[in-house]
Image 1 (tube, one colour):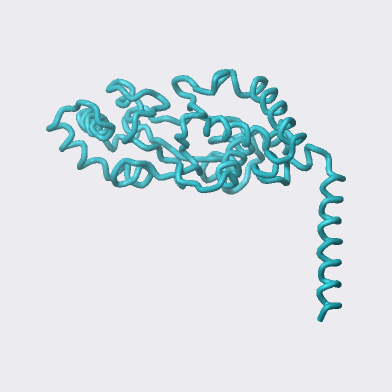
Image 2 (image 1 turned 45 degrees about the vertical axis):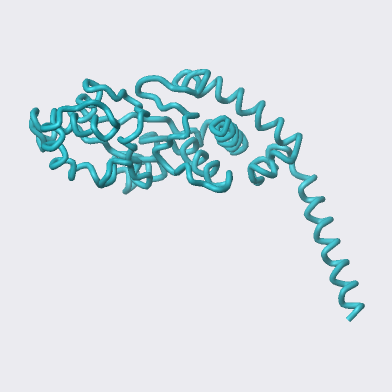
Length: 249
């Protein structure tokens, strides 16, 4: 039995040494790609690589839309307000999941159409791996009259605690069934479908009466390019880790 434990200890020691040796043989970029956010933080060289790489890539590719401060602008989301349409729920207990979700968005974009024609693209008009949701233009569809769109606007205003016409809110609520698939029955959003939360004070296109009416009438189909063919895997991972750190403050 004693011999068994000696052999087991030797085997574990050899395995640990092999893993450590393999890790040392990887370049810093390769280590970043395969490491968790926690392992990156514990690796001083990898941590410095992530910061430098992300800051450079963000300035060159992202700041023109999302702003140098990452707070976005009308029509472009704030990246650090802890409000994400896809993937990140705010209830995570680990950094691993949110970073992976951010990688997905950076890699494949939002409503990206720049890919070879495939069956999914023929069906939906967008690439199969991209983030996709559709805010329809109800004025063009004709499923809501002008009065119904105005009533819907009042209902949406009420969802976020803004002043609204009570009678119009009651009428608009009856039409909200057309919206629950993406925004949820309470208007709190549905991340698998990319449906924004309508009950908070965070708006990509504006949350006043005019902006909400315009969103309902004309729809919203903003796009973010896919970076998978422009940025390498280490840069995409660095951006995801960097953004998530900024979100957390």
